[in-house]
Image 1 (cartoon, protein in one colour):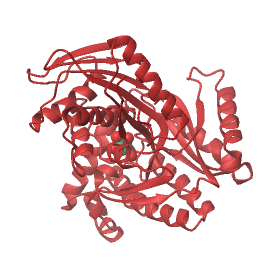
Image 2 (cartoon, protein in one colour; image 1 turned 45 degrees about the horizontal axis):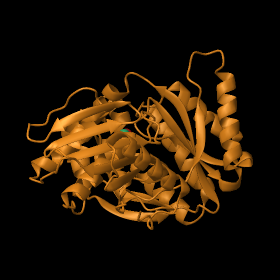
Image 3 (cartoon, rainbow, N blue to C red; image 1 turned 30 degrees about the horizontal axis):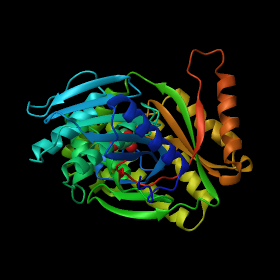
Image 4 (tube, rainbow, N blue to C red; image 1 turned 30 degrees about the vertical axis):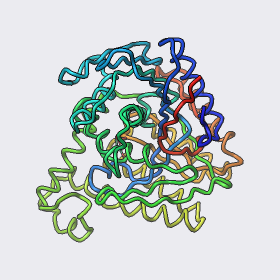
Length: 404
Ligand code: GLA
């Protein structure tokens, strides 16, 4: 096994586990293991599909896919450990979305390869994951990008530049029916360990910004809540942003300035005005956050996170009671307890809150927040929260397994 690009215990043990599970299921060694991380978004909430500025970081929770050329040409056999389900695809037949839904993330990516004229061999794939699903940590984008990695390795055709994340985003739009932006697939593909990825979603340019992991850490608290409306509300937010741009004659809300927004009060209803205000200010906040982080002004950086959350709650209206309670709890712990700032991450309506914390107090913060939240919710019928201190991770990679 050539594992020289990996140096993290959790990645190595996940990789070894997926190899062992593959061997047990398919009775042969895998040729490749494709590994893709999950991500948190530090700031820049709901601006990616508005051509905005986002700042994700890949975290040490991963999708692992082991793959080997199958005996039957043109047949793809896929098994998911998490779902405890398999499905088979005949590569000669036209691909379309199907049930169960998790298979669409794989089907969509396979379709993307085939529609580009890339020939795929018969293949056996086994998927394992340590990313909690439906929690805003991008388990879907991670599955898509890991699938693309296996297909690149198996076909010998490497997708160039931004083509891989774009193909994966298209898979999510067309097969999973989620009109997501480009942030998740870009961060899962291009992330660098110990860095945040400043992505300009207008021109798709990237700057790797160092994260001072010696002094800082990210606590991730998973509310384990996922409100029913999340998918439809997400699509509605995107639609409403696009319709505001059309009304104002702009290509996207990224073009909107404060002046222009002020002048357009008469053209927009109250809710549209709030949505647009969030986008304009959130783009500014992303740059301010980066500036403060580069200057080690962590207090101000943390304030940006709180402000981002308040705006997502009040203006963009994608938060929920559980996330708000966790962010309030972070404020209560405050600077003395080592918390600099907090906000929801991902699409909202449940999922995770991230907290920027002093590294040496990080695990105490996680325990305190989770215990207090679960205690105060003991009489409520809500899921129990869980949490962890996230370490930054490298973007997606594929390892060739040595024979024998
Ligand atoms: C989800 C989407 C992303 C982005 C975030 C909100 O994670 O997949 O494209 O829009 O929500 O910032």
